[in-house]
Length: 112
Image 1: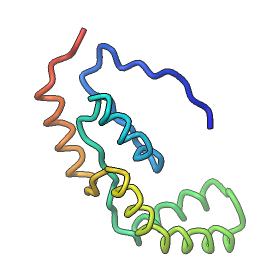
Image 2: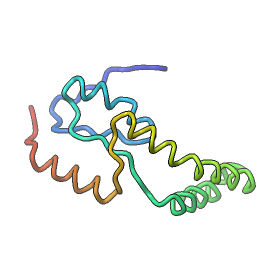
Image 3: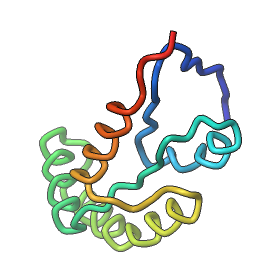
């Protein structure tokens, strides 16, 4: 796994997004950098449809492969969310995350 420096000087907050974001929660908390950590909790069926639509439009693979992969990801999603929350992220819907980040930004003036 590669690593590289990450500088947040001058930023009131940083947001790590994506399936691997929970991997850095403990270290960010240890360093006093963690304002919040969230794992998006979305309706699995809607995620399946969005992913399939995107992948079919991009012609990533044969439709049968995309459907099989999509079903596997649909089934695995609860375990992925459990793992992320086990690493310290809080499961929340997108609207909740946006409101919480907005509140965090409102309470943190920009650092120089």
